[in-house]
Image 1 (spheres, rainbow, N blue to C red):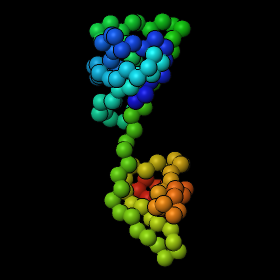
Image 2 (cartoon, rainbow, N blue to C red):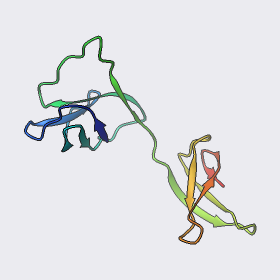
Image 3 (tube, helix red, strand yellow):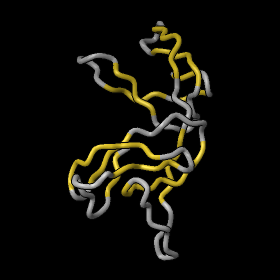
Length: 122
């Protein structure tokens, strides 16, 4: 997760906190960028904070919480070439309405796909 903000410091024991999971160490990139890996969790929204471990400041009414959304990671099981030159991708965790692109190699590059249902992309 890349967090953009102000006054991040490589000199402090900075951590991310995802909801009530606890503290996760990350990496200071610049004064305005900090990165950390989100711990595993079921899909849903949590409040994301960045601060000094053990000294997270309480939120003020003027600072709305930052939310982070956990989603299900799609998994591919089968890719089938069709007679008309298209492909059908079977798997789980696809979300109808999402924009998807398929990499068909250097000659064709990325081409748009269509999420048919939670198990099929064409």
